[in-house]
Image (cartoon, one colour):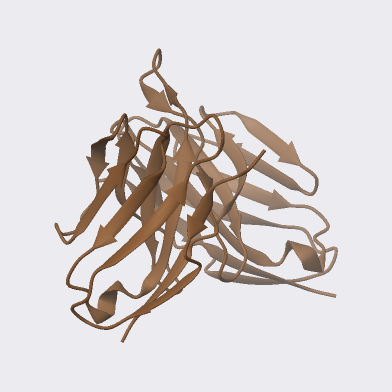
Length: 109
Length: 117
């Protein structure tokens, strides 16, 4: 069974203090690793899709990287508006997408 | 370009009742997946519909059923509601790549908040 573990569960940063979120996974035949951002009470907002080890993608202050066992979401000089829960998910060989429980990020001005 | 839409936004039901939730996929998408998200948890996969058929199913009882229409929109039905069914129900749409035999990135709707009393 596919599994996704995210750490830390919660992270509190000062504005401008860079950090990284971790997503460890086990999957039978990775068909894609996804990062989403979710604000309270709303649907997840798509950020990145990564398909193979070594791949990296960037968007504004966010950068996602992928290895054979984990993915990192690096946040550079975060702002208060980056506060949200960040979800990691994997798609395995049977098309089913498995999510982690997320990292709740709070950025303090 | 309209994104994924869901209705209703909120719903309150009592135990034992039945509920129907609706989803319209993003323009150009033909595959719809449904998820249940309890408070503080990640979304849990319920099932996926493509070409009006259920293609994949997660670990949910038969009380959860669905349908996809020719215009790719979808419904999620839950019978005999339990208190534990209270959650945010999310619909996600994607496009099936016939050549690769897989769907691409999923885009989520705003969700329907179901409360069972």
